[in-house]
Image (cartoon, rainbow, N blue to C red; front, top):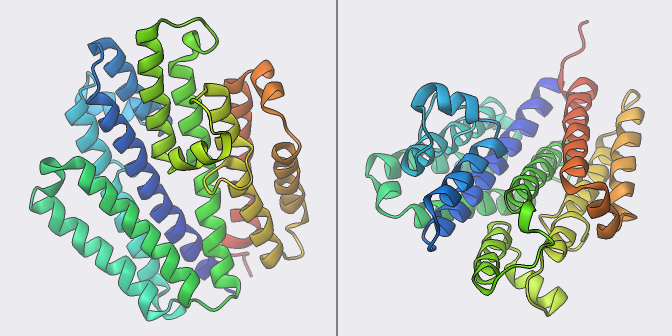
Length: 319
């Protein structure tokens, strides 16, 4: 496959997944903001959201002080923000258009319709009327895109590069979410909390689980009250949790193997080593080492994998 084509397919999927993850993170913050809490706690939540996406400097330069409505607009409809939902959906559609002949009609129409519809919804003010409903729509369109891709694309390199983009992006976003959200409550992580704090924590951890569609899964797996260390275990180490780091790396490794070439052996080795660390890891070890340190290192390694994948497969080699 031409590296240019592979590049468009890879980034089409990454941007679609990024739009979904941004919607998930905004939704959890929006839902949490409806709970009784101090202004200071709410402020930390919105700052954390910008930190997850490394957008705090860009937001500050444009808007100054962190305000919930401004953060939401910046993350949803600001076209000057390359990580906003509208920017991601536009980029996904443009990448799809560049390789229209490689995609099935259903995949192209799904991407194109999503872009047309999001513009109509934003112009009609549907986001302002019901942010929660808008975020659900973005998640649904991403689900639809993945389902149509798997259901209609030939199982060849085109599909493997699309899957590679999806799960590399998912690993990155889940790690960022866990890191920032745990960091925000780190001081109370193992401390003895009051009854009121415990009630707040329940809603806090429930919201985090819901943001990765993990609330029902947590109940099914642990059959217990929500505990931070188990939330971390579920989102980092459980291979059967679809949005966990382990599950994402399983997909990255298997799809890398399907597109392997003469120069990708080191990239495969590094992906396999990162997957092995998750496969044989224990949450107690991770917490004793320091969750923030482990996740920061994980993000560095995932970022390095993305750079290596671009070099090995996506950037055209000069003739």
